[in-house]
Length: 150
Length: 67
Image (cartoon, rainbow over all chains, first blue to last red; front, side, top):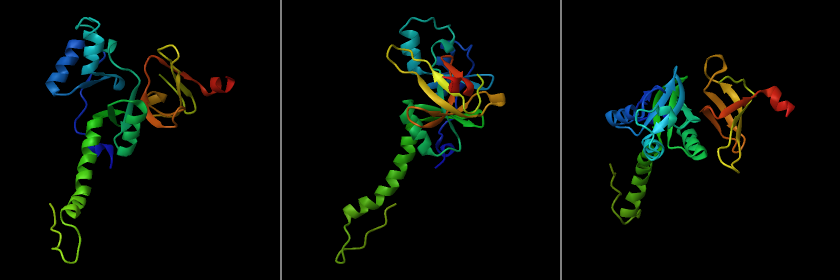
């Protein structure tokens, strides 16, 4: 399964000169918890709602300050055509919860750990249908045929 | 930031006792050797696309050999 198949949402991006309050407003408008900060089409950081709380509000940084003062740098990204298992490895090795998804060098989406869990949960559901059927209707010559589950 | 395949990427430590993170640049995906870089991390051997921050620097292959 490729990363591009399970990306649930486009990335919300903003420039480094964006203010903290503008970043918070963007999150609210788009219903997301993070904004990818880009400069001349290159990713320079990512800021999350948690960053705004723990790095800006908690330290009384003025809300009209630049968002790049509270963003996380050293961004790990994933290619849109990479396998989802590569994304899982990146989540694990780098202790991050979100990965910008790249098509070439263009950010086309944001993959959250939740997206991966949700995708695999769906697959587990399909796999366990048969198991559930076997538990409810054990195989046996003297028993009724197992009904097909939908 | 510019790099070439074979260069070493170093992320400086931010806390006392915290080791630097190092990795080998395998590819540069941006124009003219710019980021993102495909990096193999020394500590895990894991390969990721990476946009280095301002706390990173590149040691060229020549500098790496000299050290």
